[in-house]
Image (cartoon, rainbow, N blue to C red; front, top):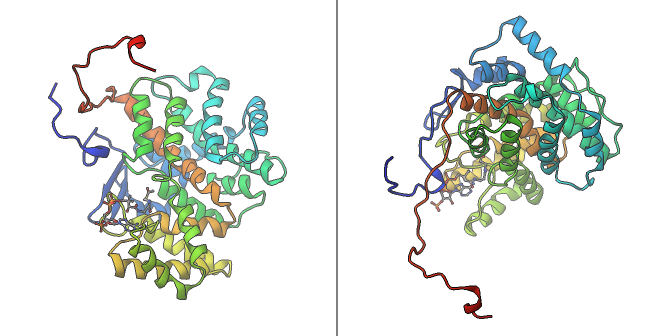
Length: 377
Ligand code: ACO
């Protein structure tokens, strides 16, 4: 064992493990899943294909893809006990709390063989298939919409929209959602994926690992920046006020959400793709207000601070144009990232090493124990 030396706060730049799943080239602005550029995947593949790629390390054949789509369709139903539990949650609950609690509770009702402590693609497929049902079940009840009856024949993207909106989405809406799901499916050792791998590295089960990941994604420093972007657009109101609001914020050293990234030093390639989808959807819906505001925001923030957009700048506008309530933006992130989380957990099981870093102790070591009776009031 090597002696601990310098503390790397936040584990920044620490290379913790080897992985074949995802590569981020922060200087060139490239994101690669299992060898494939995210731009090709977003233009030509589907979320189902990407989930297969992340789990198996290769693109599926037509038969393999059809099998996976059919499995997703069959795995969408929740046990009655879990539906009743969701219905008993407070309508005002945070949907991320609902998701975390339900994924954890679901493990109680799943057959053991789909959730062993070692490799289980069955468990990964189950969780990926069922998260839209959990979100739809909760959201429909709180919104007074009819109860959700799972639709096995829909694609993952169309089903997610159907579950949340209680209507058949258009092809354009489904494709926009599919692209958003593809773009969020993995991002190397981000905090929630790392949390999932830490849990898996103790040989705990897949459901425990994904429960850890959901709890970690919930934090506003990880998921949730897109909600703040939409709040900012509301605060700004019109394009002619962008300059004034941004300059005011920067002069107070406030952060502008949706800009900057720890790894990307140029534009996040996911932002490039979502910008186009924000425009396309805006045109289709006759509402380019978000797009126009965001373009101006980009121009001013880049000029004033040299910062580039990240994935969160445009994703909120895409979801808002689809009619999705703001507090479901982070749960949708989870509905996509679960593919990556589970791929990483399965990879962890294959090459297991307990993840357990070391702390540099900075407290005293020679204190004398004082009995409680002698410590004063
Ligand atoms: N707005 C204003 N200034 C910023 C921003 C921002 N969004 N991001 C970085 N900066 C500035 C910092 O103030 C600092 O400036 P200074 O040197 O004058 O003090 C400089 O850029 C470097 O900032 P760091 O925090 O050291 O950069 P880091 O790479 O660690 O930050 C982070 C990355 C946390 C994403 C940051 O850019 C940020 O807070 N962005 C806004 C939140 C956001 O959009 N998060 C989503 C990220 S994508 C995702 O997680 C899915």
